[in-house]
Length: 336
Ligand SMILES: [Zn+2]
Image 1 (cartoon, protein in one colour):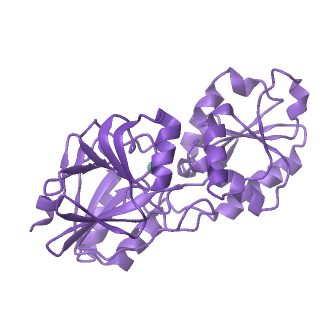
Image 2 (spheres, helix red, strand yellow):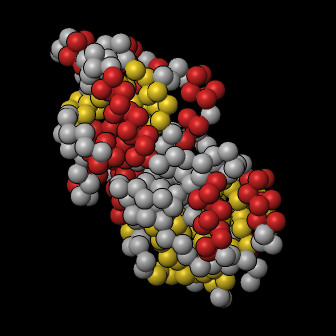
């Protein structure tokens, strides 16, 4: 069996003909295997969805309990057969519940890693390298200029700014699934014990992380209707990036606009968004993590998708590893 016969791109997403299923399809399909709960990977309307318990729960929180016709929980590390194809989910280290999906038939194994990072994250299981013939990797930050700093150092910069400007509210933009909870958890790890104020859009997901055993400490709604502006002097407020463009953000006293994203490495992006304190904090692998993952896994072949494919393909070729870009459409490199 050739790798292309086991998995190949279709307009709906990555398709497995012998198993008759798609991985992270962007259009409604009969059978979908889903790597994680971010909206561009996990869409509603499939007839049948297989994903980890957490990803299924997250989809239900975001789309409602009827997000799919039927669901099936994939237990990490357990082997299941889908239409004659062996399937196993492995941790991807991206967000809570995120998984790589290994598909295998006739001795050929392909790992579709979805989005991943290999460094430690206190809010999800760590990435596990899985031996395979073909490794499908994301390429969101696949340029040597992207080297993410230590998350603890970025959080310490935020804490220093809080000390320095006790009259100002610090508004931290962080995507509502994964990044927001990670920022909160990292703040706790760095010793911040005060109440953290959260935008309403984060509440259900923060509550869900708590039910899965991720203690986020004291959180309170960031609503100013009932109080005065001054109530949030010195406060730390976390909200989805989209909320910062609207009226909500202007209610806070002399806010310091912060944004937690791997894109904050690019100064121009921070400036365009009016970010005063950029925090380089990413849930995607940086250049070193991508190349180390490939060097560790030692696949015969690498397929590179959503992002800056060329540089990583070239890096693989220089090491004698066959590589090619995989043209999958519908995934957003901004959503991190
Ligand atoms: Zn993602």
